[in-house]
Every structure is written in C-alpha cells, then in structure tokens.
Amino acid sequence: MSFWTGKQIVIGIGGGIAAYKSLEIIRRLREAGALVVPVPTPAGLRFVTELTLQSLAGGPVHGELMQPRQPGEMDHIRLAREADLVIIAPATADLMARMASGQADDLLTALLLARRGPTLAAPAMNPAMWSHPATQRNVARLREDGLLVIGPESGAMACGESGEGRMAEPAAILEAARRALTPPILAGRRFLITAGPTREELDPVRFLTNHSSGKMGWETALAALRAGAEVDLVHGPVALPPPPGARLLPVTTAEEMRAAALEAWQQRECDAAILTAAVADYRPAQRQPDKIKKEHEEPEMHLTLTQNPDILAELSARANGNQVVCGFAAETGNALERGREKLVRKGCDLLAINDVTAPGCGFGSETNIVTLIGRDGWEESWPLLPKEAVAERLIRAIHALLGQRHPT
Ligand code: CTP
Image (cartoon, rainbow, N blue to C red; front, side, top):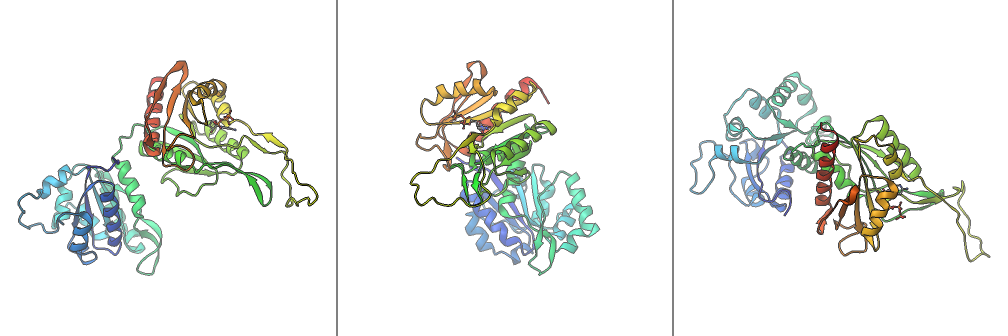
C-alpha cells in the first residue's frame, strides 16, 4: 500500500510543450496505485495523443464537453467533485486566464469551475508570457481563489529562450501534490533534522566516515514538510535530491554539524529536533596538511583519535521544556536495553531504536524496524516498515508530544 493507492487524480493537460512531462506524472501515479483520469484541453491533445494518454492512464480520456456519456463512465462534474486531487500540468497562460475569469468553454475549465477540493497547477510558458502583468494578475487571483501553484522554474526553455517559465519537474509536482493531500498538523512549527554521515579528514586525500545514506533523515524531513513544518536540514555528504522546501545546511565534519545544529536550535526557535545523523564518534587528533606518506619499513600505522562532541546530548541539555528532542540509536544486539540506557545518558525525550543487523534494517536499506521509547518507560514497537512510513509515525508521535507541552 502506497500513499497513492486508491486515490482518484484528475490530470488536466493544457496546450504547451511541457505536456510531455504530464505523461511521466500519469505513469508514476498509476505505478503507485492511483486511479488517474486525464482531461486534456483540445490544444493539449495536439501535444500528446489520446491513445498515449489512454494507454498510460489505463482508462478513458475525457476530452469533449459535449461528448455523450458512455454507460459506466463517471459523470464529468461528479468526477471533478469526487477526485481527491486535480493536477493541471501544464497550466498555460491561456488556460489560467480562462480559469481566472471563470470561463467554462471546454471540459477542463468546466470541470475546474465545478471543483471545490484541492487543485494544484504547474504553470509552463515562455518567460515573457509568465512575467506579463496579465499572467501575474491571473495567478494571484487564482491563488486567492484557493489554487495551489508549483513553479515555474528557471532554466532553458523549449523555445530556445532562458528564464522563469519552465514547468516544475514531475517529481516536484508529485511532492507538491502529496503535500496538498496531507493534513498540515505541523503548520507553524519549525523542525531541526540532522541526516547522513560525517567525514573526518586525516589528510587532504583521506577521511573516516560510515555507511549512512541519509535516507532516514531525508524521509523524516519530507514527512515534516508534508505536515506543514518548516525544516532546517543539517546534513553530511549524501547523494540524495534535496527535499523541496527544506532549508539545507550542508556540513562535512561532526564539529561543523554541531555548530550548524546548535545555531539553528537556538537562533531559529525550533519546536523539535530529530537527530538521524550517523555522527562520527571520533576524529583524527590532527589533520595532516600534506598527504600522509607510507612508511615503507613500518608494517603498522597508529592513529590517535579525539572524541567528537555529542550533538544530541548538547541539544537535549539546552531544550527549554517545550521543545522535543528525538534521537536515533542504531544498535547491533540488546537494542532495547542499550537504547533505554542511551536515552537516559543523552537526556533526550524520544529515541528511535533499531537493530541494524536485523533483516530489512540498517544502512542504505529502504525499510526499518523501530521501537520508539520515551521517558518514564513509554515505548511503542513498529513492524518492518518502509522508512517513509517510519518517518510518518515518528512525526505523528512528536506532534502528539508537542501538543501536550505547548499547543500551537
Ligand atoms: N549523536 C550525536 N552526536 C554524536 C554522536 C551521536 O548527535 N557525536 C546522535 C545521533 O545522531 C543519534 C544518537 O546520537 O541520534 C545516537 O547515536 P549513536 O551512534 O547510536 O550513539 P553513540 O553516542 O555513538 O553511542 P554508542 O557509541 O555507545 O552506541
């Protein structure tokens, strides 16, 4: 079961070259289990064919306003009302102008006029058309009317020009769509999240690090953003696309991570911190300015390491009683017992414990088995879950704790 399973999504397709990207959106939604109904405008159908849309969506394409209904097909107006979400991609200048003035001269605009639920538009057009006062007026009016808008982005356009007007990428549109469908339980809250490994340099060419991929922290940031929080994401070197909307604070070493995390925690009045980062416990006592040369006569090499500061313990010590601090504990045996001891030692409010040697757990995996423990012996064990679902449960638990301490 994915987030999209069983959701009804109408995809309105305007007449612009970016229409080809809407095919990717349809494909991804279908793969994730959504029921997708494409509604192209007549101009949209000049860029993508009915047959392509039909094949990708796996169902009929609704294009004509006056088309007689086929037995068993959904009524267009009912479809507009019942869809969980309408995505308009691309939303062209002309389409938005017609929407803004409440016209209903084709099926898509008629459907949008009847629509009351969440509707997300991804504008796409030439930069001069986008910056024209008429378009800006129309978009402002549509936002006032409740339309959600993603993009457009800046970059090279199909017309050869460059500037703001390029449609947001399918992945960004889908993330915005997901946010549109997630209750904003964390609106007005600010979260600090640490993620990924740290790197401790020995010399200009070598460093000590660990296997952390950053995935758990990324999913946690996405879950917090979807729930409406602002997110400061302090992260070590990872190879993941930035979560849209997060304030990224890239660092390399544990000491840099500490400085960035403490600053965010104190200066930006965060409500909660979730520390998923795999911080190196030690760093080389001295970083050599030049490459360390092999001692040909010496079969062994000894390194002296210095302990790094414990960010979780420091943040917990500085928490003001309303703030919630949650750590992660990757253990390799006796996980629960060690976790309980760690929660007390570090002084945090919550600790998500997982045994990294259990099947389906550990660095780089897509899933995790977590037991969340709190003070006073509170605990909750979750089954093997995708990291995305672990993150969602974690966010719900923190939201509940924040509500007890300091209602928004
Ligand atoms: N952590 C931290 N700063 C450190 C080390 C760890 O903030 N210098 C945080 C991690 O982000 C995580 C939690 O502390 O949320 C637990 O990390 P873990 O590596 O399991 O704990 P350690 O302190 O390394 O304890 P041990 O070596 O005994 O397992």
